[in-house]
Length: 339
Picture 1 (cartoon, rainbow, N blue to C red):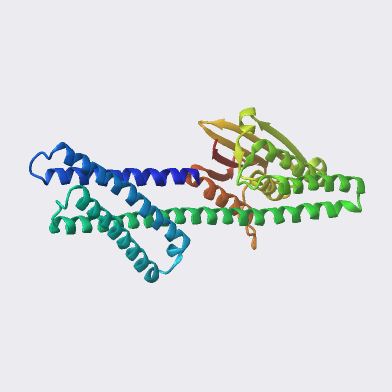
Picture 2 (cartoon, rainbow, N blue to C red):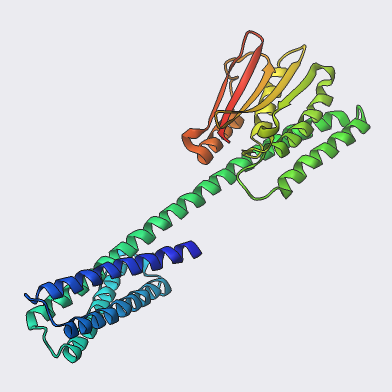
């Protein structure tokens, strides 16, 4: 807000200042010869008063536009109000100039000059109003887009978290009768993950280090279910650990690797998570045993679709997510995010 006010007053001063200087020069040049020094001083005084008054009047116009919420009205209602108010500002300012001219310069301004000056001030006031409306409309559009992006991100996160919770609870349910102690440990780890979702800042990104802790809890739950069929290896560079990533992104990719890679193999396999900084970007790799295959009938692939959409919303074309066979025995999910 402070930055906006500074920019507003800077535009007011520079814009009307330039108009005032042009008016002074035009008036002096219209005299045909060099006017007396006293006349020039009185002219400068008149324009200084004009400069201060026009800034005050347009500022009051801005206050009225905001107070009466004219920009929220339909165009058929807002445009006449805005134009009429701008004309009124121009007439008030021109009247002040004419009065000062009559008093200090003793009515040297002729009728043609009065009309020309009045139309000039009114026209400039309307132009001021147009610029103000365009700038405000553009700012509102940017803010609306930002709000929509934030809402989309929250909706996508809401789709990811219940999916993860459902899978985890299914895993725990299978262990309650078989081994209550292990089930209790799994519940504790799941509680850690849920606490992370509740306590983390309402932000679109989190430190990679914190995300890895949540993934470790998830993999611990899955390791209990797979027993010795699942092994985990993590290689996280210290510099990469401090980078920011979308929350639950890595967990989504790891869950996909467990479900479609390890879970589809009788012998199980390994999941390797690597994070490095390369050429100013965070490079993430989730490599798992298995091979890519055509999606099963009815498969939604919502996890990967959401991950790609979240990256697009946050980073545009500067982020990517690729899934491909690394070799004959492994699949790799590769993510690149600006560091």
